[in-house]
Length: 176
Image (cartoon, rainbow, N blue to C red; front, side, top):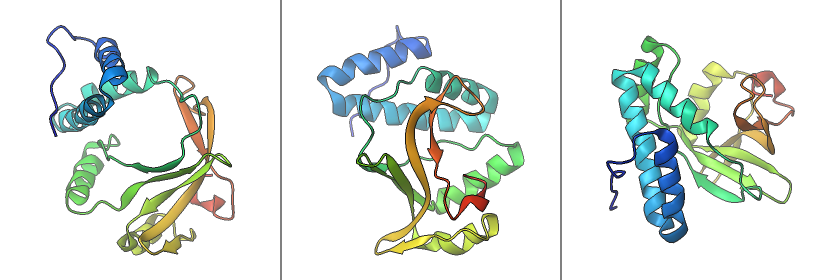
């Protein structure tokens, strides 16, 4: 994968994002690779300076735009970094460096819904956090945490657009 760094003239998050958006018009594959590399870079930065990484990621997400249409199909996942508490963050980094339970998200544009794909080995550890939540087994893993795709502002931080986890029989998970 040929990932290049942003040009030296790109100094701000806004400029770097604008450069990637421009590149995506002519070379979407390279733009995608550079975007993923940016997220990995922010995750690496969080280990040394979590406040700077948090500020950079928040600024980047605030500059995001909603897609013209609801997403459809399977989407890869990247666990960028935990930003909870240094002890929790370090433990999470260690665990996810050897075992990543999340595989991605599945979106269904037809009814504006989706769910999360997990590895089969996530069933029992998930019970520690969500003891009453019932996951669904599929041939390639587990399906959990259904959501509706809505283009709206965040419930807590209204400066960020987001989706909403579905209200369903699993509403006691704390995700509904």
